[in-house]
Length: 377
Ligand SMILES: *Cc1c(COP(=O)(O)O)cnc(C)c1O
Image (cartoon, rainbow, N blue to C red; front, side, top):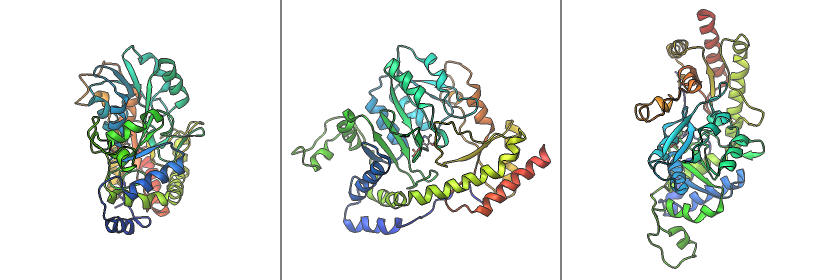
C-alpha cells in the first residue's frame, strides 16, 4: 500500500528532543523555539515570527490581533480548510465566501472588490498548494479600501509571489507544520508579524495575555495579566523536532520538487488530450511542491479513479468541500452560487507526495492513472 502521506525523520529530530529534555526546560519559548524562529526569519527574511501549536492557532492569533468586531465582514475563499474560516467565526465575524478562479483553486482576486461593503474589514487569501494568490491585485484592493490582509500560508512555506516570500505580504502570515505539510512537527504552526506595530501585543496574546516575554528580556521588572490571550506556544519537544526539519529544508524541498516534476512529466499526455487538468502555475508564482493534484471531468469520474487507485494499493484523496455549503455555514451564506469552488470540491484528486516516496512509486501511480483512462475513456 502506498499511503497518501507519511511522516518521516530527516536528521537529528530525536537527538534534539533528547537535548531539549537535558536542557531542563520543556515548556514553550525556550532555546529550540527561539532557534526555529531565528532560522525561519533568516531563511525567509521575515521580520518577526512566533511558533504556535498549529496554523489554526496562528490564524486565531491573527484574528484576535486584527480586532475584528462581531458583525464585521471577512472575505475568504470557500474552497479552503475549516480553520481559515473558524478563526474569524469565533470572533463573531460574518464570513463572505468568494469563488475560486476557473483554472486554479485560489480565490479569484478579480471578484473581491464587488464583495466589499462598509462592514468589510479583512481579506484572507489562501495560497492553495503553496501557489501564490494574485497578491498584486489583492493588495491593490486592500489598500484602496483600507482592509487588513491575513495570509493563510499553511501550505506555502518556501514559496513566493514575484520576489516576495508568501506570508510576508499581508499584516500577518500563518503557516502549518502539520504532518501533511512540507516541513513537519506533528502539530505546529507559525505566525509571521509583518507590521511592527503588532510586535508587542502578538507576544502578549501568545503567552496567555501576560507580558512574560518582555519580562524575560529584562524590559519590565515584573510580569502579569495585561490583555486577552491563550496558550498558543508549543512545547520545546515540538520545537526540537521542527528545528531538525528546518535545518534540512533544502534537501526536503529538492526531493519534493523532483517528485512533483516527475508526476507532471508522466501525466502531461493526459492533459494534452483534454482528459484531465494539471496544476497551473501563474507567472507571478513559484512552486514549493506542496501538493500534486489533478482535476477530473466529473464527480463520478473522480470517485471511480480514487477507488481504482485504492484497489491497486494507492491512497489518493479528494480535498476541501466548499465551506459555503457546509452544515455549519450553509444557512448563514448569502446564497451566491460559487461554481468553481464546487467544481474543485467535486473533481480535484491529490496524489501521494511525501519525502520517502520513490521514483518507482511515482511511475507506478502515473501508469495506473493512464491505465484507468485507457479503459474508462
Ligand atoms: C493545514 C491547513 C490549515 C491548518 O493547519 P494546522 O496546522 O493543522 O492547524 C489551515 N489552512 C490551510 C489552507 C491548510 O492547508
